[in-house]
Image 1 (cartoon, rainbow, N blue to C red):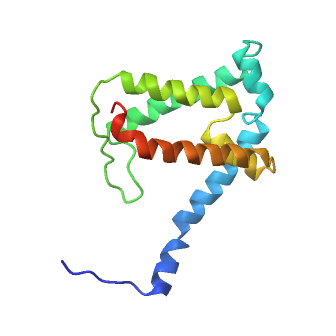
Image 2: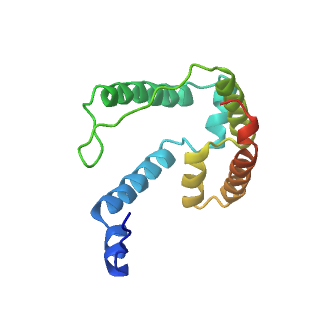
Amino acid sequence: MKVTHKPAAEQKKKVLSPQLLSFFVVGIAFGIIMVQAEIISWFRIFEMFHFYSFHMYGVIGTAVVLGIVIHWLIRKGIIRNVRGERIVVPPKAPTYKRYLLGGTVFGLGWALTGACPGPMFIGLGAGFLHFALMIGAAVLGTMAYGFLHKKLPH
């Protein structure tokens, strides 16, 4: 197997590609929309868990329906990757134990902090520094999963 090393300038050029820039632009736009829609608001999460408002249920329901439609379009080959190749989603074994355990841990973390991973980074970007503590805790949780994943149901 022949290994070739690209010059640093060529690697740097690839890192600053228009595709990567478009990802940043879409991410920033998504973050602004999340902040303006009050998705990162702890009070909106509080309202949801006390059934005071439909706001978060509407957002989550819309995301679930959109995810189902996009997943269906990917499986049909209508949506392809940036190179035009078909995206293959490998089938998974229908085990519910892992989803129940993972969903419970994720839900507990969400209920305790009032944020899931996306809004944590958006909140930090919006200047709410307490999200840095949550990101640190999420990183520690990810590391704990890395140490324990062989003992957990998969």
